[in-house]
Image (cartoon, rainbow, N blue to C red; front, side, top):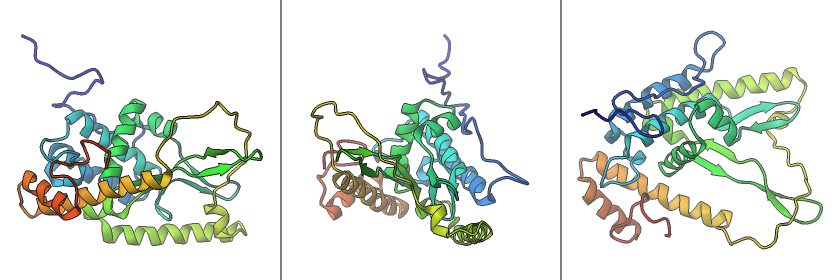
Length: 266
């Protein structure tokens, strides 16, 4: 009988691939050490998921190994694009302001499929380690359309990795480097950090089905983050995950059996 060695996405739980197609650049000319250090420390979460309860979408069972693998790959990809001064994913430029990376760049540099990337980002968002906003602008015809998403990495990620103080130092250095760059180019700092919102003509395709408003989506994500943080605190105190779930729902006023990995209808 042949032992199972993986699944359709090529994942082998005994030999996981935790590094993206385009790893963080290290050494001379590379990125700040804190970024590669964060990626290295986070890899322990694959082998020991209980070390980071917020990454567990369901307290009743461990997150599947292929999802944990995707989270590690995407996390390093995200860190490789992180601007420490703003904590946004992208690059500040004098000519075009801040250029946010898009999902295509994340998929390309991670080396895994878009659906796996999207699911991994959802886990990171629900853990409180990322925030994603979708700005909208209006064209000359009065129609609204979405601009490139703004993806932010929160300080909570670095705090869970024991890198909070180091992050504060590195952010100060990054801000100073950007200030000197702006001064050398005889430009304002805001020129590097502003985002362009060009107006395009967007064709109308009739009435679309109702989607959650940005505010409703934000509120739903805030509920998930609050749940994960409360549950994680209780688990770290040594409380059984099921009991931690009950206490979390009781404290936050959620239904008794709720967890973020189930129904998102709250």
